[in-house]
Length: 101
Length: 228
Image (cartoon, rainbow over all chains, first blue to last red):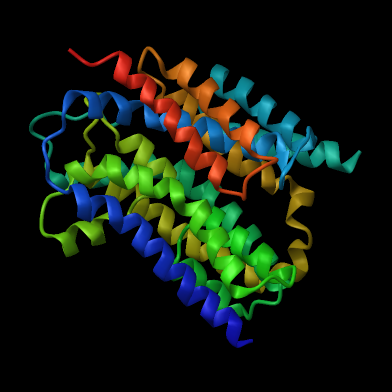
């Protein structure tokens, strides 16, 4: 399956280039004040988008499923315990249980 | 976020990153085991699946590329999907760039340590990054990402359908935990909601990955509240 190795090589090159672009273009520069504010807010924007698209969408369809309940339950655990591991385990357990029903 | 004292040495910051990265490394281990299973089911040879985790080390891009190849899609389509899934690293790299010293090659190499959890944890309140903390947090995740893939590839007969164990919920739960732990800007909550809404609104109309990249524009709200 030669295309498999082409895929591996292609993905490696693409990922390297994307991760290298910002550091090459902007390395070692002083931060203007507006840049700092925007950068600080990029984390919640990107993380929330990742959560939403993996919890409420399946491909291009918006849908609610067992994983939605699992992730919601994990949010409750995170707020109560602040344990990332417990949060992740809860998400998997609740999702698996609902799928088994 | 990394608590840093002025006396902290790079080695200590690296170790602090290693420790902070452990919970994400455990979650990543389960996720990459799931990737190993899915990659073999999609027809990828065992060595290629493991090599992919070794040299790509980007979960969402790996899953997207495999899904397209497994469904009979072209190599080009798989690569475009991987690039789109990774496009958020472009935004993260632009944010990280000013915190990296050295020449272009050295900065490009350091930029390879960008992964979601490490990037978010290494971000300081002033918008700069603790790069040694970033390197440590990513190092531990890299090791378990590869080991998990090996387990998934070799043990796929035992694991079967990884979604049966709810492993697909790990990825979003992982990022939700990070979001709840790392939100410290007064506007974080509003920006998070805006980011989620932008991503969901674009999901039916754009290729996978684009909604996530577009969500980063919610951070432009920061232009309204400049730090003192």
